Image 1: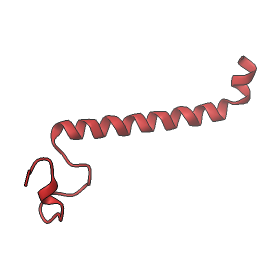
Image 2: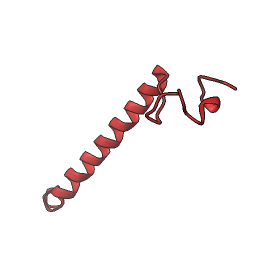
Image 3: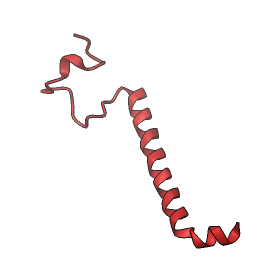
Image 4: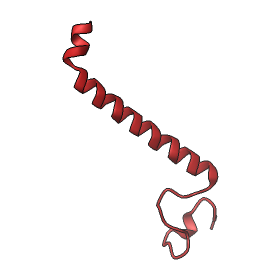
Length: 58
């Protein structure tokens, strides 16, 4: 088992970093959603989908 870990240490580290990044992205999106921020990165003024925004029904 230890030999397997040592032989694949680089792959395991890269996998752990990718999992960490994905987790941080999901946490950020969840926090932004709870705070009422949009995920599109722009304000609602001038947005062509303004009428579809969940904050602005119709």
